[in-house]
Amino acid sequence: MPILLDPQMMRAIIMDHYEKPRNKRTPNDTRYSTMHIDSPNCIDDITVFLLEENGMITDCAFDGIACTISTASTDIMTELVIGKTTKDALYIIDQYQKMIHEQPFDETVLDEAIVFVNTHRQAARIKCATIGWDALENLLHHHHEEK
Amino acid sequence: MNKINPYVLRNDFPMFKNKIKMQGKPLIFLDNASTTFKPYAVEKAVNEYFETSTANSHRGDYDLCYNVDLKIDLARETIAKFINSEKREIVFTSGTSMSINLIAYGYGTKYLTKDDEILITQAEHASNVLPWFKVGEMTGCKINYIPLNEDGKLVPENLRKVISSKTKIVAVAHVTNVLGFIVDIKEITKIAHEHGAIVVCDGAQSVPHMPTDVKDLDIDFLSFSGHKMVGPTGIGVLYGKYALLEKTSPFMTGGGMNAKFDMCGDVTYLAPPSKFEAGTQNIEGIFGLKAAVDYLTNIGMENIRAHEDELRKYAIEKLKKNKQVILYNEKAESGIITFNIKGVFAQDEATYLNSQGIACRSGQHCAKVLLDYLNEVATVRASLYFYNTKEDIDAFVLALEKGGDFLDAYFA
Image 1 (spheres, rainbow over the protein chains, first blue to last red):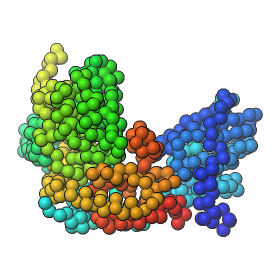
Image 2 (cartoon, chains in turn orange, brown; image 1 turned 180 degrees about the vertical axis):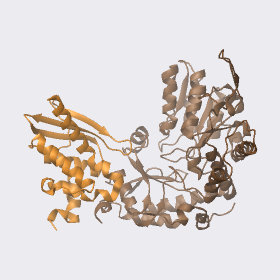
Image 3 (spheres, rainbow over the protein chains, first blue to last red; image 1 turned 30 degrees about the vertical axis):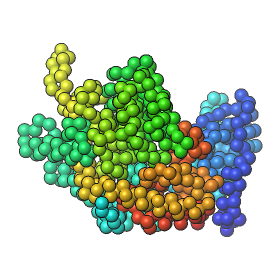
Image 4 (cartoon, rainbow over the protein chains, first blue to last red; image 1 turned 60 degrees about the vertical axis):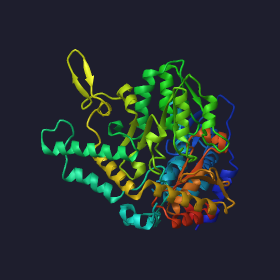
């Protein structure tokens, strides 16, 4: 079993990103595109911030009220996509969504995000594990359409 | 008074008899403030309508139809007796939300003006807040708040401090859905009436759990939902003093509520309660609700209240021993227990409880009351009913002892 699939390790990664999120902040910069996302079925209420320059994601952040699962999953996502091309970021998001929905996926691009592989055990929380990812995907698609 | 034996009563409920499991564990249902299980008697009443007595009500020229009318009348009578009202003061609605909206639109927007005021509290459920905001929007009247005491409870003396001749409606819950305090409605109505205001009482969390006597409490309007009192979803009640119902305009118009109308637009409405029951009613719901009321009456509302009180005290005593549990409404009297586990987001705790087969609800409930009185954005709520047992509480308390390891829900 790869080290990341050790349950203790997976817990530690989720708690680490929940307690010390790397990119939970509101950038004070008008160049960012933003998307607010919440759900009538849960408490999560976040905004995702994206800075794309020349087809590269130079920054990604989020802020708001969120549970452990949504905070950690969104924070891990921001780390994964910063420095990637838009195309690569969309591929990563697609693989993550496949994993969450129990379809075959390419784990080589997911890195720490693999800790959410068991989300389906608590089906009511799939929305929490994808809320930030949905927002970013939307932002990236939106950005593409504009160009 | 008779002591309730929940183990015996559980035999009346398919959800218990069918040994329903959640996450592979025996289900422990502590979300009764949201909805409740239905006994076989309710199922039977609903099915009977489908299987042996289907017909529409009103103007039936044949026996099946006539019998439906008789049974609806009997249901109305049963429910009236349950809350000590007159039969003609019982209006069937889809539930508490519709009942309150009916008063807001049919009475509030009709009589209030920009100089008037509606008093509510910060502890009200959205269904007892948003309809009044709408009245404010439509008439220009002000929506003001009766301050709660330091525990988050509505006490009559605080109403006395803010009520004035401008106050026309006082809209408050008899039992609040987050903090679970039982409000002294009798005193509230007394104060309101002294100032010429009416009291619109949200009974969604009180009527299912304790005796309700609208005459003794002198309530002007009372709303409640069938599904929170072992009845079907989609059926509820609006009680109103008859003179007030006569003054209230129908929320909906259509068949079954008009006496006659002509092509010139002259319409005569039927008298209450028919005036408010346009269209074909939720007939199976009405029959199911009657069966639910019969069931509860047979157990005895005093006995239900006593059982929940005993269980609550038992739970609180045990929960207080767990230093990780933050209790927000220790002093409340109802079966509602609101808490968090230190350092754990409410929804994560509720998911962990799910993994243990325990149904609780997390929520922001109402952001304002939580921020002002609890300093928390979200809490977990466990809510009891007569079919809950000390064993349920023991399992709940035991689960919470490991509540800090909430990621077990995903990895254990």
